[in-house]
Image 1: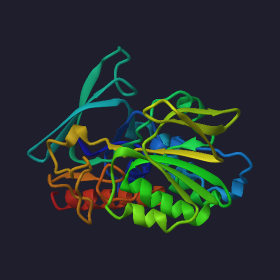
Image 2: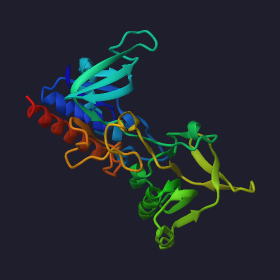
Image 3: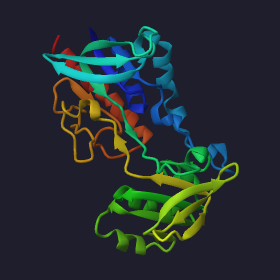
Image 4: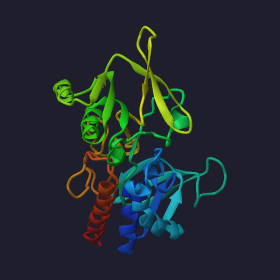
Length: 311
């Protein structure tokens, strides 16, 4: 039996694994890949390298630590999690550390668990979205707001998070074109908030039907219920539908909020003893690399204390 299982290898999971290894815990990190959403990078034309805070470089050291210690991680898919009497069992399928047969599975057991599975961006699933992803089209505008000064930005979303991000972008960008979905959830004052900003154009009652461009995304095609089209040209495009927390594996085991995020306390403890959570899958509320790194580190230290008190 391992001391600690870590599910997910984005910034939070990698930081948790690195800190746990420094504490000489018997750790097993399980994920489909190493890096998580830091692998989803967006480039923009005419952007200087020094202007960009490169998220993948921030986690590079943590990733190297885990990648070098091949015995401490397993590239696989998680099927189920169960907890009982001071033990957590994780059933995994495929990947390294498992027999090479398709569909082969096994169970890993540990004294405690950190869930760091993140939140999955929700795509629009329209023509051009896959083609231009990473080429001036992304899913997190705040990660790039500092390099969008003087530029025109198109943002589409369905939540208060989108409204807040548009307000922040307006401080940097020359113009923000914001398309809000009709069925979205916003605070009642969002219209008044946006009306105060001269460089924000609010569009409602339309939807994105296509993204167009050459080497980079250059335009979003909008359509209304009658089929009329409007083409919005911009320098940067962001799809910010409410992300989906990847908490389904433990949703029956721990408390989650109405959005499906795992509820944690200040020490990253869930409502289940021995189960911790960190990063975008939790209700911490900030989808930022530095915060996820810190939360993962904190979760590892909390798990370490939990284990020490039970020895």
